[in-house]
Length: 235
Image (cartoon, rainbow, N blue to C red; front, side):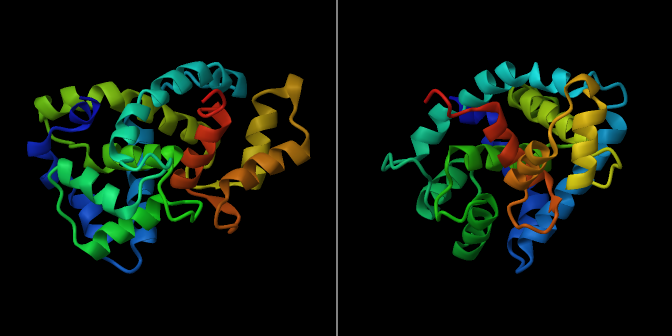
């Protein structure tokens, strides 16, 4: 079953310390964003020194691969969407986490649910479920030499690591957040023959800036990027 590939249950709980230390706090969203920011900075230093992404075209060429591999998670999503209404509610999220042998309090489950419910629809839709899986992968991945867990993570980790690489490509100044000016410049400077009209670049940025604060965190970028790829276009 795909969920067992994500992370084996016996090693999952103690590797979730980074997430657990945040979701019990009132400022859990900021805490998790900060931890993701530090994780991505670490990956920038040690994994993406020789990135193959040199232009917007090189990113777009990966879209079919992203779409195929991300859609593979739909079966897992539907397994926990017990009422088949197209979203995972808090009680269904709780069962998903319990399957991973992670037993959270009601408040902790609520905090994690709210963090992944980016559009505020009171349900975790498929795109947001992918955000949840990526969060688990990035923050639960061990930095030790635990080969058994790394073997399980590698199959799903590859796709999430590549998405992080795309984020790093747009995050030219390396501060862990995207702003509109830098994104427009990246879109145009890396593809000068097909410069994006300002209104299109602005629209793309606004699609991702869910809290409208002028900056895009990795969580917001991931949700928006999944829409760019067109994961639901032919569903």
